[in-house]
Amino acid sequence: MNQADDRWPKGPVRSLALPAEAMAADPASAAALLEQAVDDGAVIALPAPGEQAALAAALAPQAPPGPAVVVGSGGSAGGRRWVQLGVAGLEAAADGLGPWLLEQGLDPATCLWLDPLPLHHVSGLMPWLRARRLGGRLRWLAPALLRDPAALAAACPLPADQPALLSLVPTQLRRLLEHRAGEDWLRGCRLIWVGGAALPEDLAECCRRLELPLSPCYGSSETGAMVTALAPQRFLAGESGCGTALPHAQLRIDPASGAVQVRAASLALGEHAAGRFQPLPLDEGWWSSGDLGRWGKAGGLELLGRCDGAINSGGETVFPEQVELRLLAAAREAGLPLRHLLLLAEPDPLWGDRLVALVRAERSALSVVGASDGAPIGPPDSPDAALILSLAALAAALPPSQRPKRWLACSELAPSPLGKWQRGRWRDWLQQRREGS
Image (cartoon, rainbow, N blue to C red; front, side, top):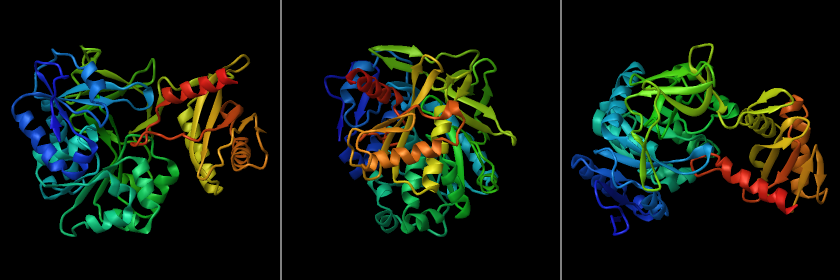
């Protein structure tokens, strides 16, 4: 494990560079270094493996004083950003979670906080900070264990006399539920927060059938992790969405844009980019996220997609992420060997925009295959062509504005390790395909 080197800016910002091997082998030692730095009032940068140089170029020598942490933020909006979060704000978020847990019948001081994410991710940082503020015991989980349910169950048996609290992204949850050992292990948790990406309805229904105490939540790096959470009892009763605001936060929907806006003690102080620090843009304390939302019938937050993702197709507003969820659910119900599906928009002279589907099969021959309005391009008997034809048939049940105009097989298609789509990257891929053809 190494600390700052000569490339890091001198001044108030110190770096704590944590190679993946060191984090997996000894996260407790990394947390001890971080705790000492926080107690010293430093501003600590936490780069992901391989991001040290990029973070060094972004950090501003002068920024708001510590104690604070700098973490990466990216997700579906595109490029990597580096946000600075004040420790006082993060502590307020941790403290605000305490009353919410008590409402669920859980005393945080008696709980086991499971942490399956590295410290450089805000949702890996917060379990450590919550345990530090609220009490209870912290247990680090090596990320590799989340990909091996049998090894996870053997390495981390859950105590019957101590409530276990866990945060997952939908990708991790689905992977665990694909194996009986993972399902049995999840049954030992008293509460499972799920955030970071949309929770597919088929996955939600599966968890309800298994009576898993899920708590879908909403937040981001800029908000200091979750600012809403749905009580598990309400989830199991069939309520959708991400719940209502936690005690430390307020939410509203911008009537003009439909964007989710947040006012919270935990909001980031600002962003580092190209050696300069830019404060977080606020309007009387409110920060506009890049997410579109609405209030559900029960008063909870429901997410519609990204503000920069909605398109107008044939006079209809279309949210590609919502269409993806419908097609994925239909594909799973039909038993299709679909691993990943991503919908992007491209200009159309008649419709304004039309959707293009990028497809990755579970076991794909990955020949150069595509479909235009359902017509395959490439060997008609290839696995990709068969899958695409089946998907196009399912899409025929959607409104015309939601049906992809083109389908393309993409061998490398995959979300980030945390289940988020870097849509800018795949738009570039699509553009290169257009230029190549």
